[in-house]
Image (cartoon, rainbow, N blue to C red; front, side):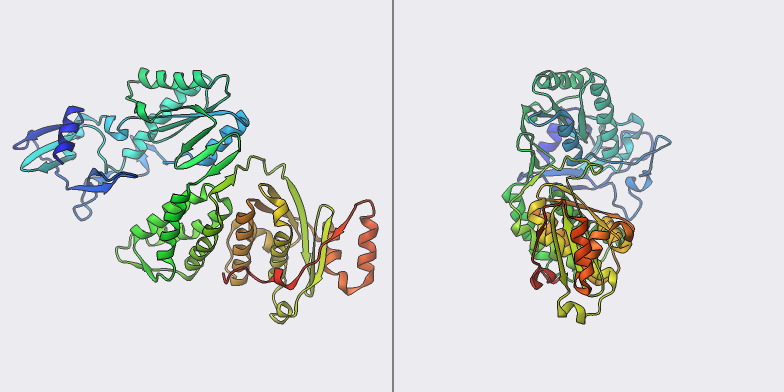
Length: 475
């Protein structure tokens, strides 16, 4: 703490020490706290402005308004950097610069100084820059770097800013100039840069913990980070109750992996909804059954993931592949380019007497298991005449337990094979080929008509075994 005080006084970030209140009015002294720094044995000093049983300074700061204007704090994502890489092309150069000390070089209104006081060894100190622990600090910092990004973009360069981090992408011919211009903009704005953290133009760079490679067009997570997250998931398997802090930590870790594993994001959203629901609770909350199954999904997937994912840069309006599927009460079929299958449902499926919605969803599962390896790194559209199936696939939600199990299976296959899936509803009359395949076993006319309508296609029939109807895990 003594080292911290010397450093902050030297930087002009705090004033003091005072033996008594230096103001002619009351002051607020808040407790000090520490949190561990990322990848460091040191701890960060924060001012606990949310203490005092609901009467702390933060309780009087509006989260949704700033200076009379509505605000909504949003941060860029790794996806946004991927979009810049897509814009600049394969082999483009990536670079980044950081602000020094983040919040701690942004001054506050001198009239607010009395609100951010703290005491140490009988002396009083006050922050005169944004306090670590101040509710509005993040959005003020983001507004500042948004302004810097705007100035920089007016020079003709692209940049994204995450609080105190700036990441840019530029062609190899212009990257050196773009990197230097960002330094000049920061200096002209009077912003101190953390020069030792700057990363010059390269085709490979880490951003928000994810390694981006513009030549291989991949996103990577280190094996060490994956092992760390796997151990956390192991702690959650079988957990019956959890605190808000534990849930927040889990969401943070899974969001990190979700940057690369897009199909898994649906199994983060439900945990987030649970967190929002219990956010005001101080006691530990019971872990919902659906959340347990979502955690199981991640626990089963992570050991199979090598930490490398392809950047998906194609637009959904121009999908890589399209296939169709259909089911009736006794059989199903699907078609993918020149490949097709038709099969009667196994006795185990028939005996369950499933609703047609469940059978349609199960047919999609079979299609993806059958052709999943052909879909690697692609965006896939599936055409289906069942609206429920389309809705569940596109929203990632269903109240029906069987449909939820199918969804987990679909996302698992998609994550393993690194493809994304979107469903499009079509009328039954427009799904003729898949419809014939699903009814193939009912009458020979279906086979005859199918071959007549596909006589100019070099067809290949695929065999579907009963194992494809079984879930990989008990979701």
